[in-house]
Image (tube, rainbow, N blue to C red; front, side, top):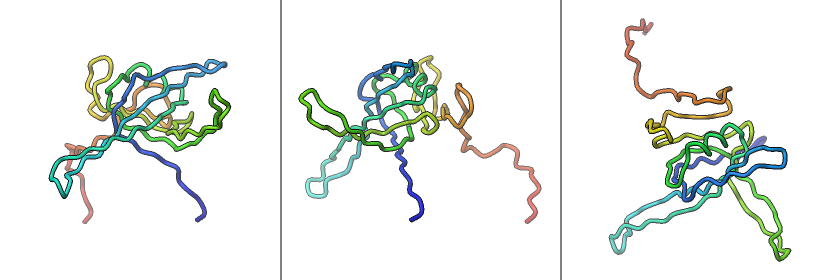
Length: 156
């Protein structure tokens, strides 16, 4: 295979408040814990079962970090796209440890707020911020609703 893809898409809820920190040069970093859940009906007992997975998410993108800091809180529902990265670190006892995280880098990643923004305006899944948008504000996602103008001349 000539190339490869490292892309993670999550839809889930924040398990804790976003943790905001700054690097020595003043860059903002936001850490999130996102819960995703699966539910199914057990074939033997017939009862509903549920399993929750927790995902560590790190936002290095300054615009996405600002949005996360301003609008996200514990319980917020989000859609995000990033990349998996594993980093090595040393604990207080000198043991090497590894952590795998979903990372939203400076020029990649996407964050969609799926419930109300902090100002009470419902997001409705249309408040998207992506560095590809080219600005530091909210971009409106394309609507899936059909256009009201259906009087186009179709040549077939």
